[in-house]
Image 1 (tube, helix red, strand yellow):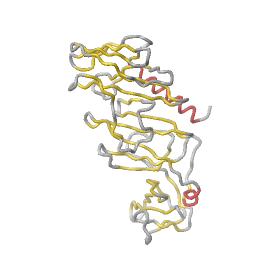
Image 2 (cartoon, helix red, strand yellow; image 1 turned 90 degrees about the vertical axis):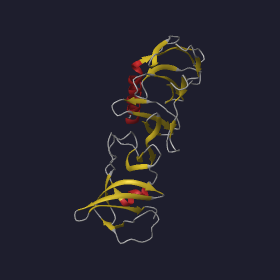
Image 3 (tube, helix red, strand yellow; image 1 turned 30 degrees about the vertical axis):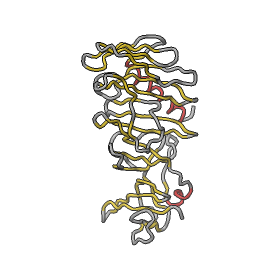
Image 4 (cartoon, one colour; image 1 turned 180 degrees about the horizontal axis):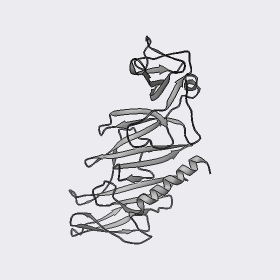
Length: 285
């Protein structure tokens, strides 16, 4: 088994562990409390949906689920929004390795369940909640999906009742041009480099770093891949597209890789005399 397969196995183990709070066998009723003084009975249906009745209101709903190619869904209960009450979570296999997930959250205002939607500002990689895992310690939801040979990760957090994209990645596609400028040590456990970005609830970038694209970075500030300068002189510009600069790095200087934009790479160099210096190198040439 190669490293990617091993990592996928760990992801699936984490998903199963996260969903172990409660799950419904085929046809088994789920009974749970969704809010103070509100109870729910949920019965999985043969078509992959689930029929829900709320008490004491008596309201009934049929929720579509996240059906696979055969119309099947696996239903369970997880406290996805960390409010002490579980949500209805539907899971279904998509293709060979992906897992579609739909979360139904109870809304006290309307007195019914609604599918949880995240605000991504178009910056997510998976498009929907996929292979969802829930980390109560950091109050973070992690979505993972595979497209072609690459695994992608999106992370979400709540700002009040709003779910927003907290962290995402974009694979670095610079190839030999970057390798000619910088050298770094890549271990067998690492995947391709990716730009990781953290966002606030409004979609503004808070920080970025170029790091291993195979799995989500650890909790805390993003840390970029360390590298050393290969060129005798490597010019450091104030911004992408700039045409002149007086700053440069020399061969052997150690840098941290922070971001990429149109073939320009953002670096941080910690000068012994001047402290941290941040600038952009042009790897298009």
